[in-house]
Image (cartoon, rainbow, N blue to C red):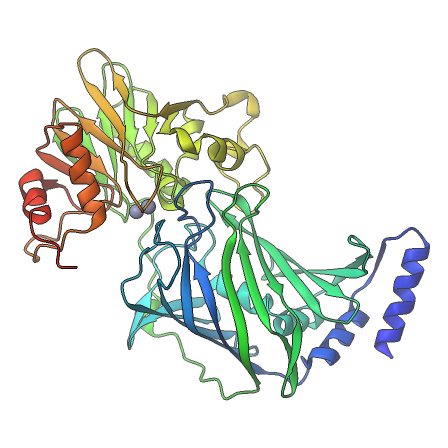
Length: 510
Ligand SMILES: [Zn+2]
Ligand SMILES: [Zn+2]
């Protein structure tokens, strides 16, 4: 009955011009009936496939690096607003190029939970708090709640809930009738489901705040529906983060669904107190003077370095997001008052290392970066497109007040100098982590700065086994004949070159 009703109204809509707006409720009820959403309070989905590390591509011309998922389960209790996603993954046959933990050694288990407004992870039997937003943008608990709503059954439930006010538009974009039903989820996210003429949800999409993309496309595509006991569910779950019209990086997960259990006994886990404490703010800075006019700016997961020249300052790394970038800028002005920040050196394009660049451009700094990043940065990082979900300074200020970002592109060597001090920037070759990697070097102070290649071990800890990233740094230092005494890593503490040589001098064990 509901189906026929829908068809009639869609036909009417088509007759009046091909597109039509209508009340989505009748259609949603037809979808609910078709996929069995009404009777479902919990659902457990299992499968295998792959997932990926968004923001961690080998180069801006590549998609996100992938990992083989040998086991995937997701359990949801819709009423409890609880979900638990457990993933076992390994490198498999996927190219070991890019960041985000690539390559995975052996097997890795991920265990992601959300209960209401609290998200946390499990590492074995230990509950771990989440200390940063998802890709340093949206809070992880919000994202995991959105993920529930992005499932077919979750969307139908959310859209039919009291006060949801779904709106619907029917059209034939590819010669086939689809209806897009939209709701506002969690009070702020516009979520749209595309429903086909078989009353199946094919796509669900929304946008979430991301420091690089701005309003980042976040969508799930569903493959052919199959009957799994009492419910119909897609046999394929395919997930995108990012818009491939802007950048090749967008595929984040693909699961071939092997089993779906409706009303499975899902064990709702209460959020332990240990994961509820607020995370330290990303704006926390702790600086340390390394030499006259040279400072390490730490205090968080990603460091920066400020270098004072005669009448300007250069900063190495604007990491994470605007909050972190602004904190580094404020600290730089405190350390070297009344000097403009003229250059920001960007080690590589990974989102956690480039997401805090925008406030530096708002301050008038030129971006010193690998030549391969130019197009990506112009089209994505510094796009003038609206950032509505988390408007930042660069978006909010009058365009007249912001010059177009200036890029100083690095090919072989780039030197920032005032005639007395120099800061040299070099690409690192032969690296699997990123094709856009740069190191910074202060020849007079004999300091080298690296990201993701080498972090000195914690004081007193045993020496780590040398890995290919450390070897690449060692080879770069050798090839360029850099005279180094101090290592400043973007992650971790400052260390000596003697210590580095001791580590890379060990035989590799594998
Ligand atoms: Zn990286
Ligand atoms: Zn890193």
